[in-house]
Length: 177
Picture 1 (cartoon, rainbow, N blue to C red):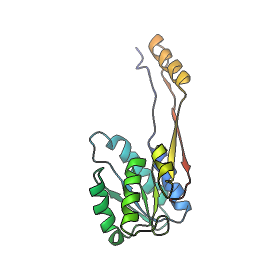
Picture 2 (picture 1 turned 90 degrees about the horizontal axis):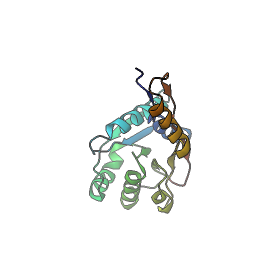
Picture 3 (picture 1 turned 135 degrees about the vertical axis):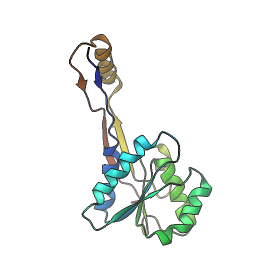
């Protein structure tokens, strides 16, 4: 009997897009915000490794950052920012990035002048911040096409397994980078 197939969602693409976008803008010392919430390391780990890959060979480096998703934690990180020597930060998602963006601005850090800030998922929140948040837009396979793939898996479990990539990602440049 077949194992069915797979419908992978490659999180490395998100990190690759963010890293390439930041490197293209001259950033070499990039912080990557990793969430503390359990279970998200399946997403954040590949994103971190892909940013590291994008920076490799540029003479730069990547620093993992693990603040809680709170204003207080973002403020504490922003207070330490000058000592970190980072010229960019990639937030795990737009919420983390927006929290840090606000905290950096409150701490007197110029964005994007001193530090570029980038998020992921292209939430409305990112278009409402000032400066507007650069992000990685994740384009998932359309619903009908996804339903057809799942239907084939269920209807024909003895067929040859089929793998499809369901995600594309692209950097959306806005004012924060």
